[in-house]
Image (cartoon, rainbow, N blue to C red; front, side):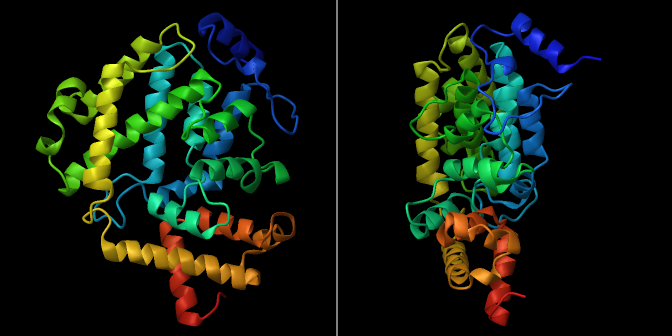
Length: 336
């Protein structure tokens, strides 16, 4: 049998000196007896994969609201693509794949229904504002898992990577830094793929210099960016791209915001109004009718306050659950 201690030993023998070692983890908030066969980071990955919040990502919007077709990305498929890209980079740099994968699989657990549109609306409604990375941390620390008030009780390294996968703060592990950039590599390129499939843009519309540098296919662009990160980060204590690739990736991102993310073919005005109506109505409804919340949420009101609990409940909904719940309330005037 290959047990945990042997795996921990192999990390020191095989991984880069700059890799996070599971035996040196800063640990968990609630100390636990170690597993016989899995390292600490492997346990974190497994807890995330088996969580309810991970399963719900299957029915949460990535970019396209109410897409017609089976091949558009969801929040779950986005997460899996980020994980695959990040693991490839981590392997190429001899960093800790298990830690990288755990961060990648957990980075969007706090995302709202209806993608960033839903996030923007909850940011307006919730006092103090709403950010999905902060909510993702709250999911693993409090809302989901088998450790009671400790949630999933993940290691500090995984929680840091989840919280700082977006925003100005750099994760303190190289594995977390890989996920931060892999997230951008994944969504820019798969959103291009979805936008071309839907007819919103054509390949010929993409900036010619970006295509020349990064590649004219989905797989080609990802391969270019992944290899560039490996080459430029090898032996370094910072994960980075070459200026050339980073600048062209950023130019593609700007192009996507200007031509896709705010395009009315992607987010129709009537769909945006519907999303705004649904989320605002449900938020206000539960503020006014807290006893309509599921019992487990009601128990949290005394400790966290009604706004926090309502925000948690709405943010955790899938697209279809939010729509069905809204229709139920509108039709019957209350929840059964």
